[in-house]
Length: 339
Image 1: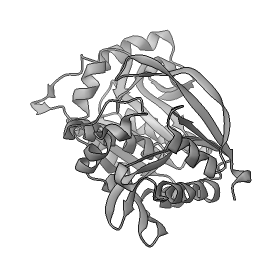
Image 2: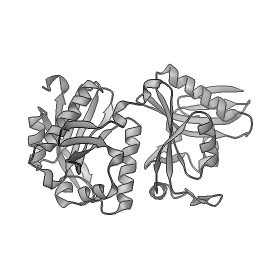
Image 3: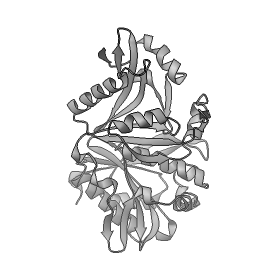
Image 4: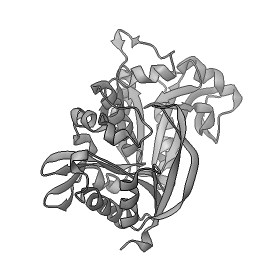
């Protein structure tokens, strides 16, 4: 058995992907990925009999697909061992993957090899079917509704402290892990017209919509693309703040606060704490922020934080509420200038 690595799959692998997934496209946590765009390990015996597709995300490798066409010959194990070797040689600290609740063989396979179930995303698949209708409704009598996140740590230090730690801003204000925020709190925040007035989003008015939002955010957290916290004031939920689009030494800052907590300095205090974490823990060099031109409260906050206006982004995004393209103001903070 030989295992070779391809930066992108050769054309002859299309039929293998289609036979297993009905196309080369997969939907993972609401994101459509085409296996033909990502590297793959191919097991040859002497013809192709196994395939492991993957991608690098910061210090992680995400397994997108693992296919073995000859059962009982250890093909999947050999591909996974090779994947771990590649991960370690690239200083990756974790292997991750998303699978569905019906995939009992995969759950058994990965858990035997050191993976742990780290998150359950209920009712994620109905949304995925809107992007890929050919996803079946059930398998062997099991309804296919949920996604599960599995993670294998390759080094002791790979479980970063900020995933579970509460950040204490001051005695009355704390920033708590996002997975502790309740769905009803999400609905209350993002169904308030004053909150989403300047945001390009539809209101979140149901528990299903709130669960899908939480699912997307938590997936970004596990991909290490986002550090997000619920803002709590005297034990009451007040809003959300995050460092997102984390990539190398840069990221973006975002926040949403319930109107009853406006003009009390809470967003400023929370933002200062998150910026300090970006500087001290994530070694961030540049923090960006995008805001609506009419959102003067947000603009004043950014200016207090020493963000510098870089310009107007013309027709930057499409607002799904209005179906209109809207401008945004771009701000940035070089962390060396933050005091």
